[in-house]
Amino acid sequence: MSQDDLHVYTQRPAHSREDWTVDQNWDNFTQDEHEMWDHLFARQSKMLPGRACRAFMQGIDVLKLEKPGIPDYAILNERLIAATGWQVVAVPGLVPDDVFFDHLANRRFPAGNFIRKPHQLDYLQEPDIFHDVFGHVPMLADPVFADYMQAYGKGGLRSLEYDALDHLARLYWYTVEFGLIKEDGELRIYGAGIVSSYGESIFALDDGSPNRIMFDLQRIMRTEYRIDDYQQNYFVIESLDDLLKATVETDFGPLYRGLEQLPDIKIADLIDTDIILHRGSQKYAQLKT
Ligand code: HBI
Ligand code: FE
Image 1 (cartoon, rainbow, N blue to C red):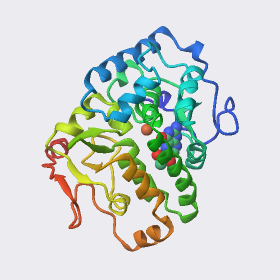
Image 2: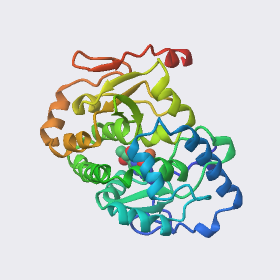
Image 3: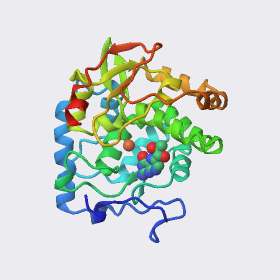
């Protein structure tokens, strides 16, 4: 990927507001960009029934995301605000952690304002409109998940005071981005990184390579992760209620202090206390090295 393709900012771009938001400028998207959304949408929505969790499928429905073209946030937000009080705001790309958390703590989800190019169809390093809106926003129409994301934002701001951002970021990674959930005894996807990826939507549920382990807050916060390929671990929650409860009922102060005494867990390692649903062969990761 060339420098031109990157939208990671350390300094606030001049055209953005103080909170790093920009106008979506929906009228400026080209026909090609709308068609890219339609292509990705059609590919994912064909495959996701029976794979994505109920809350995600309902979110697509309630927000009427099946309407062709990149969603206009003014219209999307009318529906999202009515459902849970969340709204989507446009940002130029990756924003600083404190800015990101402050938006979440106030029920605003920052979404990148560009869509991938044809050569990035299956993989890009930074979140584009398809990942952010198709991947994240349907879950925000669920009242329980909506509360979880806001709690995460507040926790994120506090983690900066404890110097514990690295630990908390792992929680985001293994839940919001790559989480699996049990539904009627079967595994389903709720993580945005999976649900917005054609390949990983199949890999995460069906492949023999990755570990599938029951959710454990402290364990997750000790576990390294990879950003360059499919995950080697997926963590499974019993329900969204359980996920919310585990985070709002935990005092993160003592948890962070405890974590300072414990070593990190290498990516594919299993530990004694793991409740393992599937012990991965790690074949896929080994083939790549
Ligand atoms: N900015 N636009 C955007 N999207 C993110 O997901 C994001 C971010 N900035 C920081 C950040 N994520 C991380 O702090 C979290 O993933 C922990
Ligand atoms: Fe994301």
